Image (tube, rainbow, N blue to C red; front, side, top):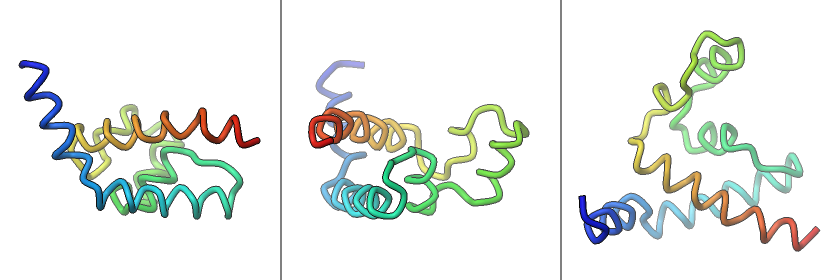
Length: 93
């Protein structure tokens, strides 16, 4: 796959609306918990059920991505956006 088509796939997965919602979710998590855990983000988005989260925490689900109910491209988008937030949070502390 060429870089151009990968970039287009990323842009499609990372819509402005989704990134805006991610901003709201992460702000709420920071306010409520003082930290952002990716699993909490997926729970807030509704793409991970509390039951699957609990099963994963007990070791009954080995690969969390298999039960997150969005495609891998969107999971990657969210994870990359969360990684970009880390330096900003560290410098603000």
